[in-house]
Image 1 (cartoon, helix red, strand yellow):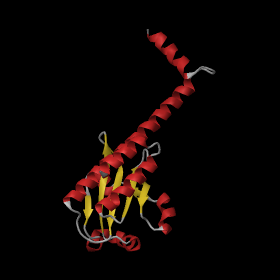
Image 2: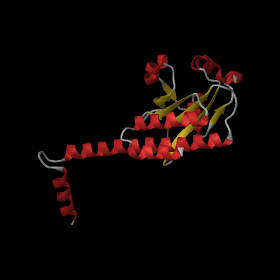
Image 3: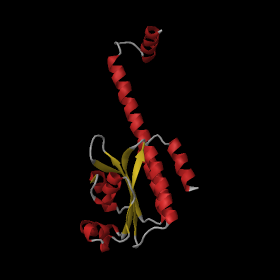
Image 4: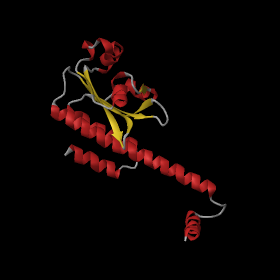
Amino acid sequence: MLVSEIAHAIARADDPLEAFQYALDRACPAVGATRGAVFVLDHGSELMHAAAAHNWPAQWQPWLGEMRVRVGFGPSGEAASERRLIAVPDVFADPGLEDWQEVAKELGFRALVALPMEAAGSVLGAVTFYFAAPGAPSVPAKALMRTVSDLLAVIAERDQLRTRLRRAEAALDDERPAGATRRETTEDNQATVE
């Protein structure tokens, strides 16, 4: 039912940020995550920005807009770089995540799962679920997280396609003779082809 709700929201959403938020707000409780975040790759960069956040403390809200995750660094960055699920059953038991332990204390999480968002052979970002208790999620929870990640990738891909379409239309508008409408220019081009 959750997957159906999210898919329906994607089909109706005009704003990708609203769709990301809707999906994350439904998915986190379903998989037992106390917090969550969607990170989207910045165009032409190796950095991802937070596009949605579930249940983050108020004092972190302004910081989320400024936060950037580098692809290849940290669990979310590794998930995007390696194109695979990264599960950390206990942040405090992993010496390689010492830098994350202070953040984990402040945000109140012990475990996390990060998944890449992939579409059409490209990584578009990552989604990360944060859990209050240590441990690995169940197989069904992991499957649901993967499905949600795929749905989030659809949102990101659709947004990229819309952006490319707007840029292409703007480029056509720049080339159009002064006073000509888009329809007149299209009809002229069709007449030339015929």
